[in-house]
Length: 339
Image 1 (tube, rainbow, N blue to C red):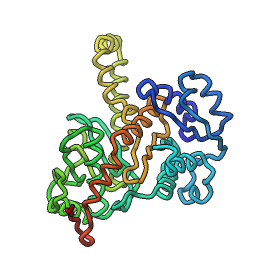
Image 2 (cartoon, helix red, strand yellow):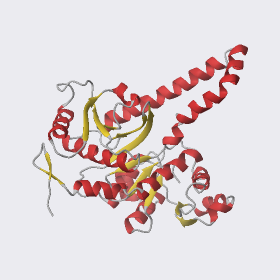
Image 3 (tube, rainbow, N blue to C red):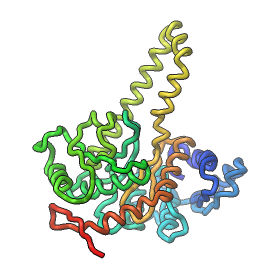
């Protein structure tokens, strides 16, 4: 029931998704009087969904603490409970981000060895795609948190992006080893000196994100969220400037008509809906946050992201990696071996 265009875009999104994932099945938590008429419009959807009625919805302005105390009967909480009980393999919501993270962390808990989950997202770069985390779950992070994010991001890049040896970088204000706050510098020292097997590139700067200098970008949630929103704003500005330039005169409109096939390719490559779906890595269960303003195309891709996490065994990969890692004090990690 969450999102600016819910629940209509949820049902329409499922209809689109079933073109790619015909075996997927869904539990829909929400107001049955609103959901049932929408489901009835899509013959393909009817055979793949089950509606679980609840009229309690977590509003966008509700604080996570309040959602935890008062939202046990909400559609969001019941969906997360289904994952915890094993009835569902993943949960997708376009609702309140803070409430979703708070509830998911409380109900699902974190995977062994992980102190805090991180929000991860993908985007296009000059070399292909990148994954960046954290995007807003943790405003302040310790060096240990950043190292854990690096391990989780590398597993994601291997399993979902199909990269045999993804490169990992720490986002910083410069490439020099003396720059940055203490957490970033300590995390870099751990990643450089440990035998975790990660291809650690070192520090990267903001311009390296879209250049594709590394495959995995690691940073605290405060900085990561600002970087993400800045890139989204720049993309909208660029798209608007192109539209205005191509409609500024008759000659420009004729040129736009001739260039339309090429412009369509560019638009499709950078369509933000194709990268919708922020993944909460580190939880003991799959949880994906769709953008609140998403339409059916974007929501379908958010659900597809959840399916990828499940099918590619990302959580299993994270658990395998952390099974061989243990802390050696506040500032270090080591890989342990044994039969």
